[in-house]
Length: 282
Image 1 (spheres, rainbow, N blue to C red):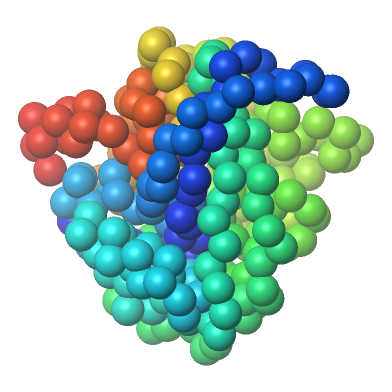
Image 2: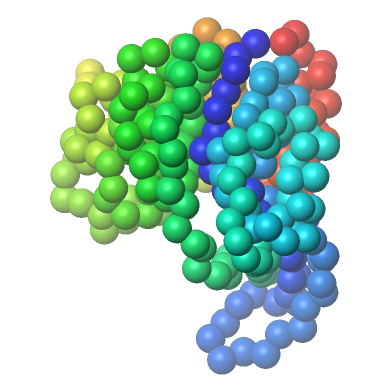
């Protein structure tokens, strides 16, 4: 299988489960769901490990006990954390406020600046996934394009995202640009862009290319927790492409992986996905 490098966060999530949906000015009771491993690095990487890929994480955590806990937990799932940087200071918990319908609100502190050093030797990697605001990410991506499949999540701002495949949710695009979706993506990703995937929950996903727009249906699921669904979707797409699938088949894998993700009360992939992958040829 593939060697995959993931540039994304590793988090310590604290779960607060509310007794009713959020409403301005309301009062709520919550149950403390404890701590769990989260962040795009874990949410994307663990499923890829279960699919027999070798996965390394580029991220940063503090030099405190929570940082130690994050790295220990991530390593037990088979993620290679040797490229994770440590900063002086505390790793703050991410607060995930969960409502009874499975929706979540994320409350996080301001992160310290994360600056990448020199890029790796891309001949050692078959895929590079970006879901981070780290400074220098675009330089790593540009250096990787000629040798490595580069997949990226659309950033919250309009920073460059050089890549072959750009992924966004429909809500990410709301009010962002008057350009067509393909023109908007091309403006951020550059001429190497082959596909722009826009997900829309249970309505499925559209994929834009220079020639056409195509649709792939969602996979029905009993939603328990939507946290990490987008990360799982991206992981399924990356797995499909690294396995030689065309973009539509890869998106079908993404939809299936996302369905497993929302059916489990965690942000990292659940045992349903692990069992599914264990039952399929690698």
